[in-house]
Image (cartoon, rainbow, N blue to C red; front, side):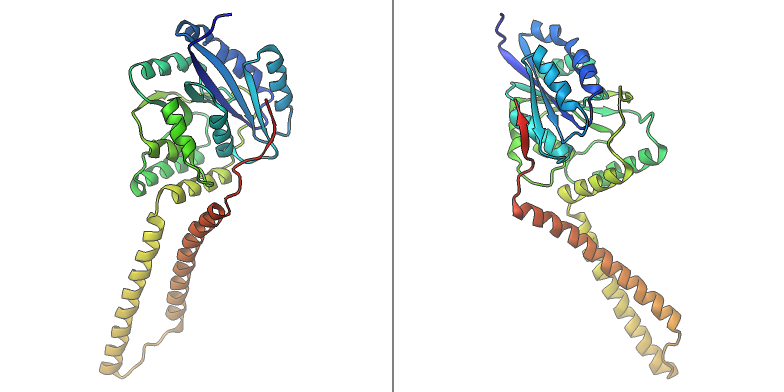
Length: 313
């Protein structure tokens, strides 16, 4: 048996992907010969994120045919971010690549991605140039999120960016070294830096199964991204406080002057109620923003494991 000089670790987070895993494996293996010609061997790391279907059994069946297939199975659902970290930590490869099992990350791009690595890039990232097949409302808010992040964060987060990314060992180790509990990989990829090549491709539909990302889950995930890589919400809360202090001071002067000139206190309880309600609402908004940051700090200080492994091979 030929011994290969280098190893490519293919990391595949899975949650209820029993139908997709065999199709993904078969499609990815079509690129095997190209990498063998480059003296690079594959290893597959499927990270089961507490699936409720037969995903684990399907991966075990693949393992019986191919000893390069590995499994990390969580004790429960910890989320995709934890699955990504677990896969990176288990990977032994000189190179690593993150891919979804549903084939929305086309394996056919792997040779081109490695070509850029050979040219001297440390990382090759992918982004979708369109969102065909997505609900319009979801696409609209996704674009607004990326636009907002470009304005409030110093970390590069590209519109349409996927987790599909080819990395050298150095980049992989840098990502693993970031130990925060509240992880947002798209931001982490940008924060670590290194020389990155962006590849664009058209959106690809899932090969099987259904998306696990509801609008609400994506909304919460976007909040995690904002809190993890920007302190701008805190600055905005502070500006609101300053603004309303100034407005209140101006109103005090206005009332005093009016009373001195006309001898008539300001009348009108409806306007008073509206002003109090507005200021109260802004106060609660600012408290909510600070509460979000405190909740993240609370989870970080507890230092719980990012995931727990039930089974591994």
